[in-house]
Structure formats: C-alpha cells, structure tokens
Length: 501
Image 1: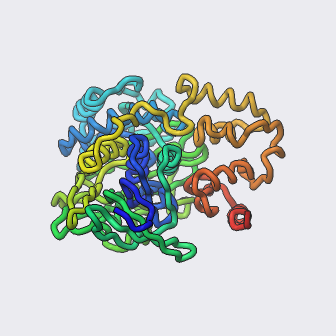
Image 2: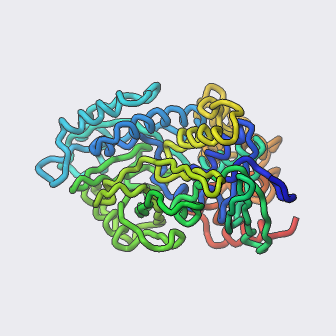
Image 3: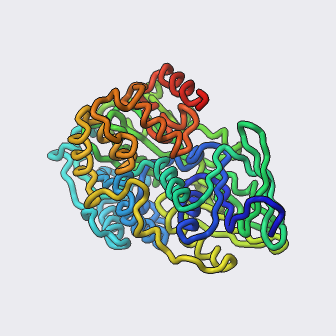
C-alpha cells in the first residue's frame, strides 16, 4: 500500500472496552495500531454497566456454561492485572419465602452457587456460604420477612477507567489513539483499506491506510460493518440503572430475585450511594439517544422497595443512566434471556479483511481481544505471542497487589490527603498517581483546587495522558465526582480545559 497516508496493520473502530482491549493487545504484540473513537473513550456502553467483573450467576439457568466459565476465569485475571480498579465484592442473595412467581427455591440457589464456585478458576475469592439475616448485620436494612440468605463473591470495577487505562497502555506501546474523530468510510485498496476520518471539533479530514479493520463499534457496529450483505443481526437491549443515597452501611451488595425470573442488584457505590440495576428492554432508536425511562426508574424503585426497609421513590434518584447491550440476536423472545455471549464475524470485501466483535460482556473483554488479535495474525503474519493476562494495566503494579497497603502508604507519604481522597486516588490511578502528586508536601503544591479533592495537577494529567477534554470527561468518566459536583465546578473545569496552552 502507498499514497502518502499513515499506514497501520490494524485500524480499530470504537473506543469502548473491546476496542481499547484489542488496541492494547495488538500494540503489545508489535503491530502498528490506530484506534478511532467518535466521542470520548468509554462514552457509550462501556461506562454504563453495572460496574461488575463477574461470571453472571443467572446465566447458568440458560445453560451458558462456557460463557460463565470463561468470565469467571477472567474475573481472577482482571483482579490480578488491575488490583487498583478491580476489588472483591461480597453479595447477599436472600432466599424468598412463599411461592413468589419465578423465585428460585433455596436448594436451587445452593446448587447454582456450588457450580459458580467450581466452574471457573477461583483462586482467592471465598466460597459461597449460608447467612442468617436475623443475626447478621446485612439483614438490618432488609424487611423482616427475609430471614435466610446465601453469600458469594464477585468483583466490582470502575468500568470507564478500565477502558481508559487499556487505551493508555496501548498508546504507551505505540498505538495511535484518535478520540473525537469520526469514521467516515473505508474502501478496499491493494488488499487492505483506505480509511477516511473527520475530526469532530475542527471538521478537518484525514486519510490513512490499514491492512485490517477491527469493528468494535458496539451498538453502532451494524453501521460500519464493511462489505457484507449477510451478517448476524444485532439486538440492542437497554439496561438502565439508578443511584440513590446509600440504603445500607456496609461496603457489599445484594442480589434480589424480583419475580418472573428477573434479578436486580443493589451495590454500595462511591461511599455515599447505592447503585441499583438493571433493566432489560429492547431498543430501536438511535444509540446516542438512549436514556433510562421514567417507567424503568419507577420499576427499579419498586423492586428495591420490595426488600429494603427504607422506601425510595423516583425523586430520590440522584443519577440515572442507561447503556445498550449490542447482543447477537439469537431469537429469544425475552430481552432478559437473550445470550450475553460474543461472536467474532470475519470477512473480506474485495480482498480487504475485517473482524467484527458482536455481543459480549465487560468481564470477558481481555479474552475477546486476545482471540481477535490471534485471528488477525492469520492475515497480518505472526508477531508476538499472547501476553495481556500477565502484564499489569497502568498503575496496577502495586507492591504485593495490595490496594489497602498502597493506600496507607500513599496517605502516609502525602499527609495532606484526606482518607477518602487518598482512597479515590489509589483506586483510580494506582501507582500512576505518584507521577502527578510528585514531591508535593502541601495541597497548594498541586496547583489550583477545583474542589472535591480535584487538583490542577490531576486535571492536567487527565488532559495530557488520558484524553480528557471536557468537565464531563473528568467528572463522570475519569471519576464519578459528578455525583457531588456543583455547576460551578463544571464551569471552572470547562474553562480551564478550553484555555490555550
């Protein structure tokens, strides 16, 4: 290929978890990689999940054993390579008394948890156990008719930071990351692709060449699939969540059976809140317009009120969000029962190869990326071997992989950090925060204070190293400080970021 444009082995379309995972893996194997994202990284589905790294206990009922087994193995892997972002989370699963339609009896729950403990490579997480809610503190927030429960462990994750740090690692290994850049078109050229892009801000266009396209556009994948007339059909399923002031004091979570075979999570979130989700509803609109509906918000409030002593109403919701699961349409009538498994769709258009990622779960992204790059090697030529399961993500090289010990050391070294602020920085950045904290001995050494513990030094790091361009990028995707931020904080950040440098 020639013509003066930049040349790559792979062009990845989509800056969500799958796209950034592929870019990281491929760059680490020595391929020339470009990634293009029309908005901010993780601005779509990948920042609107239930914030879990889990196998998917309920998918055992539909017989998706391979998917659950793979996800359980990845749960341990992600905890190992990103101990700052991924932490164990203890769930309480109450046993429902009586004959509520769709409720699983205790023996079935016990069997499912036994399988869950033994299907995957569980190395450090504790096994499931029984719990007497009348005696345990976890029973205090629940209604008194709930007397018995099971406990089990999965992990929580900061989903959008997981995306960004995969992109950061990809860039560190040589990938070019183009955010706020729209993919316009691609055409076969000399056995590869000629691709046209447009900068969303300036409108400037550029062309580049790539030997292979990886379509990781998620809900938009159908619109960029090149050159195929017969392809698997995507089914877009909306999953909505609400956040309210915390409904319980402990740092764990609940999994509730809500009847008709459905479940709802209630998860301790960002210290002061409870995250409740999710719904499953087919969606047919433009993906960028997805939002939690008033009916879904009311449903999630009603579901929580069936279990917690303290009742909530839609007016108690401090934040709601919705993401689209781009599932492969398997013909299942109920959206909640549609498979969450993924499919890799490979093809050629006039000799130009592409691979499309369809469906999938956040938890399995690293394994999906590994398989994509393995297949890409068939047409690009083999370079390096698999590597991502053993290499920490940026900031994940914590001594002994011990987040608590690192947090204590961080607060001892930077005594001006409050406990909550030190924990936030440790969880968000791991060892990366040492770079922008530097030799600071006072808060003033970090420059302007935007409030909420957000310093000019941190904002500059996010701008220079993590592609943050707006207050929304920082307050909602690079952090969740938006839950506390006033409009003045938004304005101050946007003004600072827009100032010429």
